[in-house]
Length: 241
Image 1 (tube, rainbow, N blue to C red):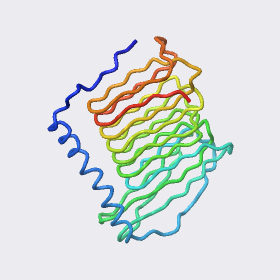
Image 2: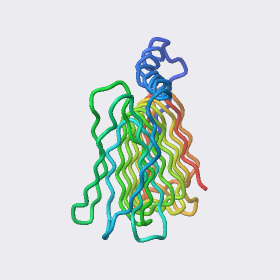
Image 3: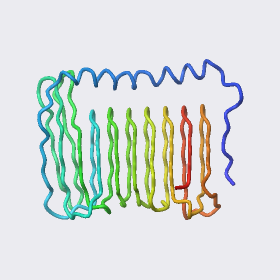
Image 4: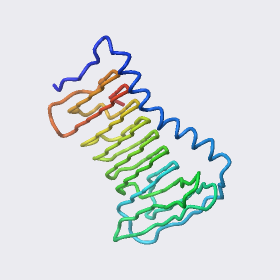
């Protein structure tokens, strides 16, 4: 059984203060961006569908939330929400083979970002990254990768065999309807809550520097289903559904 690191009874206040201060610039930056964005240009969202077969979607976000939902449809539908203070960002999408990439660039200005709402066939592989914005993944079954420099990652009703989640300042909350083969979640600052089917046994590895780890799923030495969770500052919970 893997060892679960435990926090010593007395954690030096200097350590707590240093970690909290390290998180403040990212969190404060997101809050400030939201306040400034309130006075920015926010035109109506533009939408389009992608003709042709798509097996993988890569979303290179920046400032703005990203929502990806799996559906029974065979096409990818994209809705883009622009926000800017002076000139609109330049959005682009490219289909290379069966891989669709969504991205944008911004002229130099105070506020500039794009929020995405994307519907994909459930089995599509999805990779998402944002610098300041939340990521929400719903009803997906393909390989998943999500990274948020400052933002919460939320995943619901997943059937993906492989999933990797990383949030520098935020947290990870993921619920699986089917037991994942490999699940990895990490944060620098923020909690991690993972809920997986209780019918399977899991090889679980957790690590926290400041925080507690609670694992209530059935543990197994088999690598058929493995879970790794690491948080420098935040609690970790791995629970059965």
